[in-house]
Length: 546
Image (cartoon, rainbow, N blue to C red):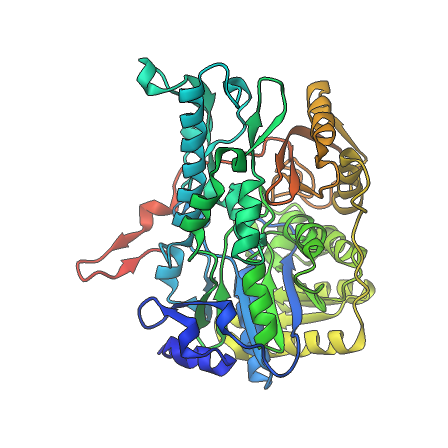
């Protein structure tokens, strides 16, 4: 039975007046009404993974089980995660609240509307879109914005490929100015990134005002503050900025807030939630999207540059024998069969992720997330390979056993943090040219030999620098299914060329987005979407959300 959320809050020292209740089992927290804990700032534990596969790796499940395991060992631990997007929930992935005995609850409510944060981001994004087109309509050809140079699109929290490229304003003059635009999924919206990187309401409003919406007829940048949009946008986001408090199945406090994807955005939960958690708990377990080449790299090179949270004291890399075999060349349908040789072959992928975390000077533990098809021979092969890499190793059986199945991992993480002090360092300095930053990530983190692009993309990046954005970090948008930008290139690709296909400024969020390969900022539904198995009974019980 879930505990009343007031009881979970009380354990952390959160007073009743800081809670805004959403029923009995979830609440928003007003950080300014919470006094920091007496133990000083907590220690951050990041959970990342090896390159994802269609078989699933259970990174979120592991993060939840690790927090439960730490509490079973007598530690004061919380978990901080992102909110699920409706796109993956109804698309390919399904729910994102963990699995088995390691879940955050109420799972269905978290997976669907939750406290309305993502809806608020969508509304704020589209308010700015409407104000852009309103300005175009009334200014016609001699105004602030050039209709041909508008960069701001619209947003929707759903996988809908037909909205990637659209034409608006067709018809009589009252319809507005006809032009081409499109939709991004809300998780890729700069407004979502801003929500997760803002330190408070004032910072949120300032960042919203810095959003680049397009260019003037003189090809000069035009920002949201010039449309006087930031105040109304902030009004829509005022409550969404407050972190959400729920719990795991074992009563571990869980802050779930913000939802940027890591393949097309920066992929971590909000700074506000992380900072609050670190002020109240001794250990904060956070997960970053996808693998170390995406969410972890962006956490290190983008989020930590804000200075609002400390570097992780340790990093957990989640691996599965199924993923190792897949990266070793085994077909999806054959993954349940024992194949220790394929585990060794696929270890090259995990090995690169170990190298990536070490690039940033953070101690790590490899967590083997256990599945029922695993064999002792395969697990022993992986443990031996990790030993050869001098990478601490622990078995995680949290799906079946919850916190009890995370004790070994929790113990190994504590041992690693106490035995090795993090020596964090950024991958690149901010004064490097943008292309040099892209090359640093491509070569050092992905393993690319070089970076290439068409001349028009190179000129676009040069224009971004000329407009004053060259000092920002880069947020590379690429496939999550490979270290390269080719989703079919599994294992550890070497000597490949990273193809840059586009670039865009997220000046409010504070980074430059670099698009690579065929990455889309508006996903499409798969042939058999998860929505087909989701239903609600006559009694109101939702079924089919995994």
